[in-house]
Image (cartoon, rainbow, N blue to C red; front, side, top):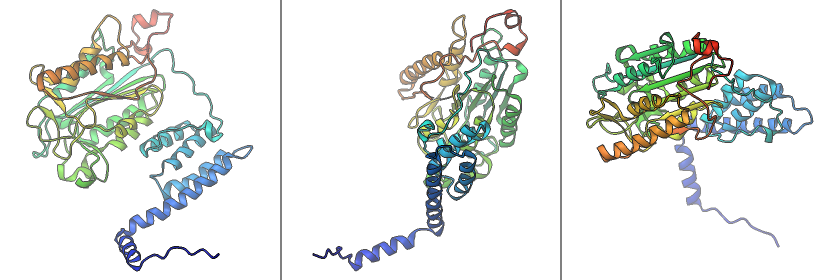
Length: 398
C-alpha cells in the first residue's frame, strides 16, 4: 500500500510564507551562518574522536565558526578545550569566558577527550593586592537620578581596604574614582592598568557603586546590561556607558587568579525613595551577568541584590546597606575573615535590616556559590615588605 503524506492546506502555506517574509534579512543570514558554524563544530567533534586529536587544527577551524556565529556556546566551548589542551592559557581564558557569556554552563573538556593539563593549585600566599573602587552619585546627564551615598560608599570602602588593621592594601595600589572622575575612559584605563600590574599570585578587588541598565530588549539595549558612568547619557547608553559583558571580559583577562568583584547596583524604578535605581527596567543583576565575572577558580562576584530586587541606601548609616555591612564584615574579629564568612555576614545583615527598616526584600548574591574556602581580602601580602610577612617562615592565609 502506498503511503501518502498529509496535504498541507494553502492557507497554512500562506501563513508560513508571511511569517518567513517578516523575518529581517539579518536574522535569516545569521541563522544560515550559525548552521555553517554547527557543521564546523561537528568536524571538531570528529577530530576529538581520533586517536591523536590535532588541537591546533581544531582551533584553526573554530576561528571561522567564531566569525560565523559568535553567539554559539558550543563553538567557544570547543575553542576553550582545544586551547587548554594546546597549552594556550590566555586563549583558553578568553574562550571560556565567551562560552559562559553564551549560556554554556557545562565546560567538561574531559568528556570531549581533550587531555587538559592539571592547573597548578593556588599559591599558598598572596604576593600583592590591587583594588579599583568606583562610586558615582552625580551624573553629567541631569535626567539620571542622583544617588546620595554612592561616592561616599566608594570612599569608605577604599578607606577600609587601606586600613592597616584590617584591609592591608598599600594606599598606592587602591585606585579610587568618584563622580566626575569616574568617566567611561577613566574606568577602562584603570582596568588596563590592573591588567598590566597584576600577577597570577596577586589579589584584585573591583568595586562599583552606581546605577545600571538592565539587559532589556524592549528598551533598545539589545539584551545587554550597562554600568552607568559619570559621562553616560540615558538616551545614549550604547555609546558612553560600559557594557557588563565587556567589563567582565576585561576582568577575566586580569592575570591574578584571585579576583573579587562587588557590584552595588540595581536597575529598577525611580530613585526617589532611597533605592539605587535607574528608570530603564525592573530587576537587579541577573545570574548570567554575574557569572561573567566568575571566570576561573578563585574568581568571585558578589552583587547587592538578586535580579528582581532593588538595592537600598540608608540615611541612618549614610551608606548603602550593602556597602555598610560589607565594610563591617571585613573589620570583624582579630583574624581577617574569608570571603565566604564575609558573604555570610553581609547577606544576613542586609536582608534582615532592609526588611526591618524598609519593609523591602534585598538578598545579596555570590557567584559561584562554591569555590576556594580561603580567599581572604584582608590577608597581609607577601610582597608588602611588612615585618610580619618578611619574618614569617609559614605561608600566610590567602
